[in-house]
Length: 290
Image: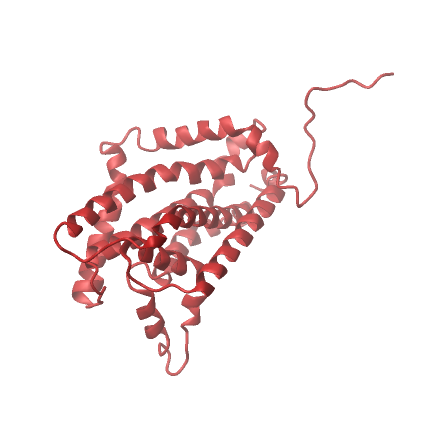
């Protein structure tokens, strides 16, 4: 008896190192539909709509300026404190949104995942892409304040490395996506991680020099507990290097090191592909545990 020839055959893939990127490309139209859904539905029934994209970084930067610069007296050199904080907050927000929104992908989409087949990794990827719209609005607001300070005789100019700024945003998105996929895979078994993500992200913000210079953070950590040196926390924090390098590009202020750039690039690539591996492995069995 001749075996039937099927047009498509869905079978479990047991190869751990099969990233299935070719299939993701074939479903790129679905990816764009999810991006459109994320953008349209998120603020569809809100009064201010997309204005929330710029209200949050503006108010956060104002609070940081009042608390850390005016009250605590932290100096930002020749850069206006508000602009310094707005640059850090804008870059940080893109990473934070990518991480938090993808960290519960399986939990939020269990209904659709259980009914129809498509490459599951498309869902967190669509979140990272749709967050680019929010980032675009926030960077536009940053540029407006940048021009305001520039035309008011503040000595600020972008660095020549500004040409690499898109790569920095790509690194932020890849790192947030990789970490988010790893956490999302763990949430299927350990629901408590959902509550820890919010706290962990807030703690990570303070350890990533979002609101103060990286050099100052290194100096303060050297004697935080007597004679013990904890400055290594900054040196091995890739987010801190990305934010500091981003401010260096935008404001021509701050420091960067070749070690920090190389280390961050290697860490980002490793965490991204590790996230893909863990995510692809979990998607085959998550419906039984979630």
